[in-house]
Image 1 (spheres, rainbow, N blue to C red):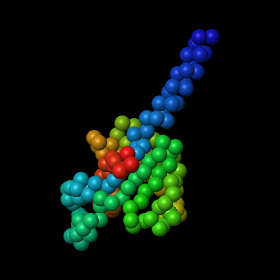
Image 2 (cartoon, one colour; image 1 turned 90 degrees about the horizontal axis):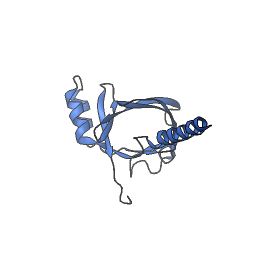
Image 3 (cartoon, rainbow, N blue to C red; image 1 turned 180 degrees about the vertical axis):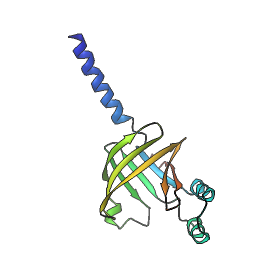
Image 4 (tube, rainbow, N blue to C red; image 1 turned 30 degrees about the horizontal axis):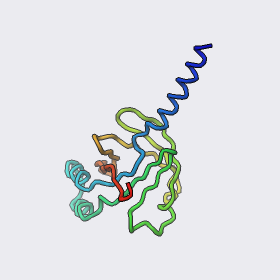
Length: 146
């Protein structure tokens, strides 16, 4: 009988740890300097694209992950009136390890499911972006309210 209670306790503890041990929970903001540094290391990015990306393109996007497997991505002041950006959308964890977490989320804008890997890098995370596959970095963002 003791084994049964120990087994139940271990199952409850492990499921609680999985729910709380989701390193993406919180608010993350695009980091322009780190992203541009990554872009400049990649070969093949055209001068026109570098000019576009270097002119305040990165550094605005916010990712807000909640512990109930919902994500909202938005650009303050630019996407406020767009319904697609103002709601949390559910996502599914496809795989995870010490290097990355892979998620699937339905995009209302593209009208399709998208899969994205979020890689860990010290205190920040990154995703591969654009046809050149450079890294867009996101770092924890502390809001005024907390």
